[in-house]
Length: 344
Image (cartoon, rainbow, N blue to C red; front, side, top):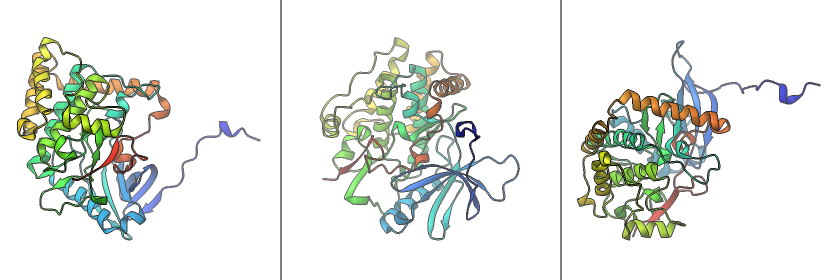
């Protein structure tokens, strides 16, 4: 008999789903499953796609179906290279789906992770600030169309194999003109990155996203979220009342970035910058002043970091970010960053 360990891996045949061939399921979560897919009429050289479809029992829930429509509408409105692009959306046999480019790469959460998975390795300041500038640009474009993401976190930041930064998963976005539905009577999002007004159930604006953006950048600089405590309640309390953990004192050439991050983390939304594009401009100015203004060089450095991460952790190389795993961010058993924050 042939040793089974020596047999080549046999892929399951592609399944037909409407106009698509589902090549392989890459992830499943509380609400959706995500497949690497191709169009059935694809031409040679056409890239693969990521097809996310709601689980059948979720598709039957009107409230959750409206959340799906919210993501579709959000992606239709935004045209920016940082924001994951909507290619197609529809239903097959009553099951809604969304098709997006297959981006590959790793989430920022994965990129920061160490081999033991209990700690995180900070990024060099220039890479953390570059990621922040790219995300601020994408958020500025989203806010200009009336979309507030509400779930900016390391799991929803994807860095492609070529070093491009993308903001993904608009499944709980607030979209101007659509009824604001929150499943389970709660405000959804990842708790370590929630802004004070989010926790208190107050008005959500673009400044809420920029607070979360600053938390993500500080985590990339520090190795942990700036308000993180041992448990959810302590973290939420600290976000509302205490100062963030101090990230490493940046060199004089980074001083302006330090001031921008502190301003974005102010408790009162009215005291924070409100324009993502302006924040991106400030951060890029700091990068240029520090001799890191070459975008191609920064992208290459991120790509090299991803390649090194994969060489060190080959078993984790195919794990995708939150959007591609189809995670339900209201379920901590599906996503350790997640919680449902009750509105007061």
